[in-house]
Image (cartoon, rainbow, N blue to C red; front, side, top):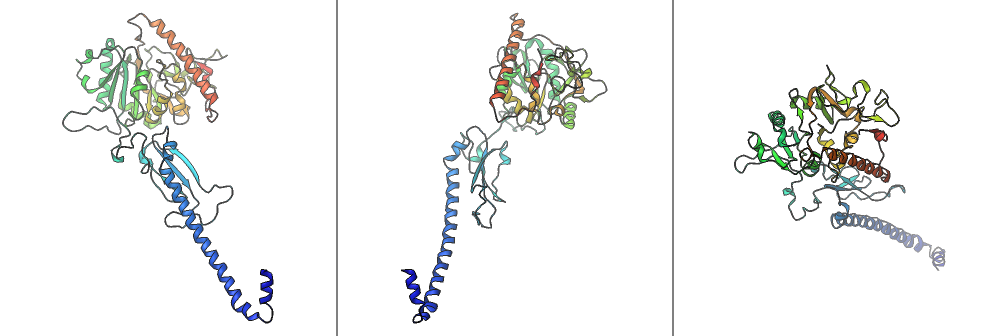
Length: 437
């Protein structure tokens, strides 16, 4: 019918009506439809974008942030000149989705911000709340803490950003030795926390510094048990370095401030002071090198009681695995803030002795463990090797046997977890080639 109507208009009798009225009217109608389609499509896209953002800000957030402290969503859009919502001016290539949601974590609230620059719209912490803090105003939420004791009256004390933390598991029998250690660290403006494994706290009150440190008591628990429960990374995040020491250490030749200066300069994320030759020594890598500031390799490449499977010669120039390099002992480790956050997660809540943990410290070295883990020679200590746990109950042999059992359990857990996690790539697949027991 339409073709007959057009043919009829184009006949000589109605040719004027065809060119004068019908053809211009048809052109204007098509133009109006095209312009309307553009604005309707634009409005539809804007409504879709608004709707997507509102959904994310609502119930969707509870599903996105299940185990992280701080989260934000990034909505990717191609760049556009729109002044407010930046809708698409052209359809994206088929290989690129129209809208992509990415969930990322942020270690510090200060790093989370809202940005509309470039091709991202970041819905930041200003839109979201830390799970559990929803009933509170955002400005009141305190995400971290410290171990600074506050007075009941007078000026409030604040932790200096350069302050470090000294902790140790102690017993009343070593009070004289611990007294010397604590005095050293307090004089260098350290915060101090003592873990009393024998349950005796009142016996320390005679010391002048007793009220200036934090005391925690639990019978027959190691420093790793205490650390897992009382040194959460968010609690100690204000401290630059965390010292987690044993009690039977001599510090006559150790200065905490000089030690901190060395490890900062050399970039040692995990370290320990070298052991004087008078020390009970289990691994040659911890022995002090004369005329040296620090070292990363085992001296003489011979490791006492540390032999690789099938190799009776121990460490040599070709072995770059713990305890030949990239390794410190459990006795007196020092961790940077970032390294401790990683190590804390590696400590097992149900394993008291933490044997085997030192083999894996290098995974938390924030980079190459052969470079970021080291032993400081310029500031050294003496390890007296005094028996502590189980001594009063004549259970020393049982304690050591249990330590061996926990080592095997931890090793098996690591190997099973590494096998099951298909998304994780082991940077040091031969770490367990060595045994420390």
